Length: 464
Image 1 (cartoon, one colour):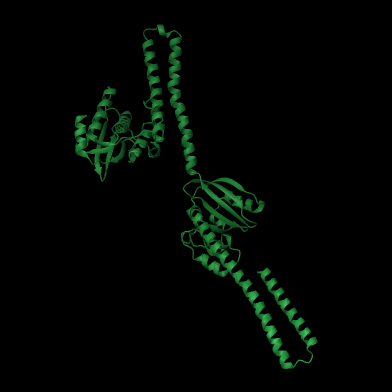
Image 2: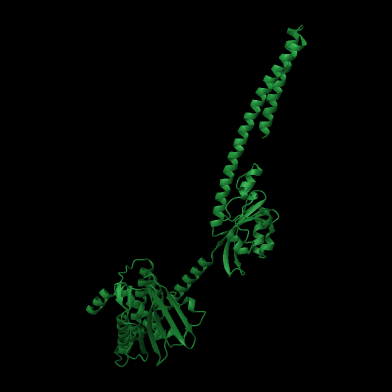
């Protein structure tokens, strides 16, 4: 604008200079010209000069207005894109000024800091200026206020509150102050005790001379996965160490002369076989679980009569556990069919029923029931064991997680059965859950799709 003003002034001065030159020449060359004629010629010349100066000024101002309009449209579009990005970000974004007052934040930050959520999405003229509108045009400001309300920017009067009022965490406030004062990026980890105990990675960076932007990355899930990974390897090393220690001890005993001890050498060899079989089973389950999780296991689902599969699983368990003192009960309609891979369904039921037997009390019972539930079938395995603590229930389907640490030393198993069950049920499109009460037993439930072609399945089941 200043350049345009300077140019118009120059053109006006040039026109005025031409008019002065004209008047001088006219007076010198035509000294006897009548006053009326002189005035008429002067008016005509002044009108022509004024016309050309006005045309020049109007053309320049028209170009300037077109440029302002173009910049306004670009600023408005930039503001829309910025608002859309901020609104859809899962990370919280907070921008503060040199007085550590919040000037802009998105919906994710509003949830983290309990900022006014009713105003979330209302765009401000300040946000328009932040997006690139440097013209200060009032029309641009009015247009930016009309942006869609789903975009997550706030009006200044709603956002101009102190950062210390939004959060009392000294680490967060200190990070923003350091970024503003030292003009350097700051990266810290913070825990929000008042936000469901979540952990965040906070990156604060200076934004111009008087602003700082902070981005809050939620790392709660990453830390939980890392903790589960560490626990898995710790549990895996423990599970492998126990049979390996026993194998080393018995083999050293045999090599030390016990091979000639006819009373104990057979028992030692049986112990060696037992622990080697346990290691083999553990490695096999890890391999199966890895294949299932990576999607390498291909299911061939088809209609399967549920009652027949349950009966076969129970018969197999009774044959393998000759000393089993647990009674079984089955309450499943004969006509109930599920759409499942027969082999994997047997694996699911075997793991669940085997767990119900292992963690049951002597003389207890295991009951398997099933009933249709819309287009699905809900299957339940109820036992009368000691139960599982409420704090352990959410983690029973994790790999190698054992709810009862004391019993895990004496109970056979790899600790991967429930993890395999969870992934196989999910691969079938079902859900799995657990309910338990200490001293009264546990109930594991899962769902499978209800089979549509039951008559064909019945014939196949009879043939099998």
